[in-house]
Length: 470
Image (cartoon, rainbow, N blue to C red; front, side, top):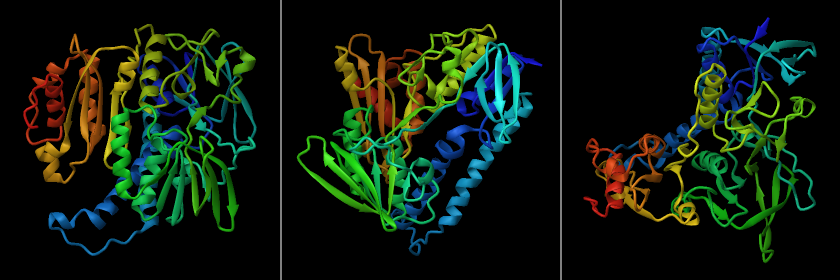
């Protein structure tokens, strides 16, 4: 049997690509090296982390957020195994859902390590070592990413045991709440998982090489966000680098110094989370042997997701652009449509990003710093949730909405939100920007009252220098 398309990897990019291709009439198969479908996102990433973020937020609210509403409860007790079961059940439902969708759309699944084995061929090495070769007209590489290693002062990679020195995978499966947790990296993953264990009782210290948290996000939003996290109990050591991580008894010692070398010290911890980023997973795929060009570990593609080798395409974390599940999904749909003769396309200027802490941070488009660096003339409108009626009623007044528009055309170039439900609110901005909308378009759109979304309208009005409620 010859397939029209074989997708290597069943994460968000891979499984969505396979399903869309099958919908378009292409005979499609997926090769997955792990025991379950869904990749990092569904198994040890996006989905389980959100399950624990939600559960830990509920625990924190029960302990600190209900009394002001007149709801008096006994101090909550943590049942960590039950919380972990909620996480496992959530993962299981999503993984089973992918398997069902493959069956529904007649996508064939092959378990094992996929590898390019020559023109039109993919070899699959099963867990038993047996190798079978599949024939296909096209291949899409969608193998995602892996944890980026952290190196000590001598250049040696710090060993991750997923018990005391953990990656995001181990941080999602701790058997008890650490008394002291050190997070190396103050980006999205570090702050999300740090939030989980902080809410459950851990003392959390985040060490970040840069002089700010959330690199890549709007600086004003990130600065305010850091202050909110500090009020919640986070401690930060910014402009600092880790020089060593050493096991000491049942715990670990983290050596660090300031980037300028002026200060240095050690921190004792029960658990250290290495959250210094991710790297493309391209090993063992036969790319070099096939002649596929890579640049800094990423597969080089053209505007139609094609590599330099005929019939080989790539999407998601292994190619350029942000390492986001929804970006990979859109690319999966686009390449499937291109292979079916349609006009697949991804608008990279309108890809939202979300930090699922409490409050959340969400962003789409360019930041104020990026706009200024490009020499753009902009108008900025901001509106605080402290002036929003629904936010007051919900006691969720931290944060604000910030809208960046072109000062001449009024086209919205970026929207940045710090606040409760920011990850949902950003969808309105994403749709607006997808249709090249202006701040006036948003300002003249009727929003239900009272809702948190009214802060979006007011921020748009603020771009026009005429907000109503502030």
